[in-house]
Length: 299
Image 1 (cartoon, rainbow, N blue to C red):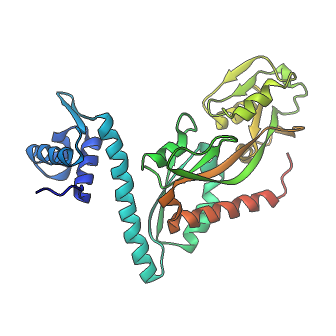
Image 2 (image 1 turned 180 degrees about the vertical axis):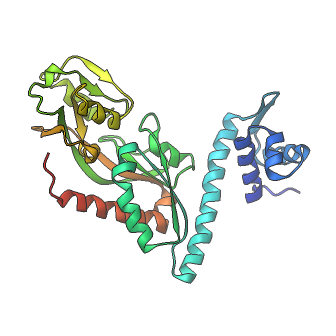
Image 3 (image 1 turned 60 degrees about the vertical axis):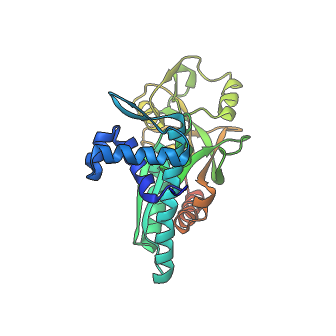
């Protein structure tokens, strides 16, 4: 009688089929025959009790059941990896292995480098892997939910809990600033530059109350492009403090009375939040954020 539970090897095989897009390509990747892959997938489907892949001339695509199974496969295999790494680390007094981090652009550029430098100086066996993900749709938290990242640096909602199955914690809250090219005195003389990720409901409601902002608006790819275009005199913007770490000398940054702000935090699964690597990263992120907060910044 077949075991009910899928084995780690079967989970890896299902992920190989998803990654390769067909049984034939997965067979080549795993050095197996196509018939062996087909038989193994049918065995997995029998154990699960659902069809996991749609077979067709164009390859194999996960069904709705398969997509959910693959999420759990990634999460389970990652927890097995963490189990081995932390058990060996406890025996040897080290912290080793990969640490998969999803972060939005400005956090990856201006927050993570210092935190990772501190982290790897203490734990040289850790291998951080950073995936830059726009904070659109499911954003960086979606990478954690799907098992593709261990922890995400995310913008946290003011009034909504994290997605089901995830935990979140605030790292810091940062204000927005008025950003003009050079000594531009009248913000309304230039169009307002915006970017798709700037979708905080608090920020939007704040913008709606500001009758001094220009009616003309131009949307560009991300906040880094916004800052570059401000430096070139193309427009003005309202930008969060983290983005302004890369402000050019020719850009004028002015504090705003009662400014909007955004919460920047971390998101992980319940199990992931307990892993030593994630806890150490969060500790270093907090330390870097605190150090940046006490530095003298003239905006």
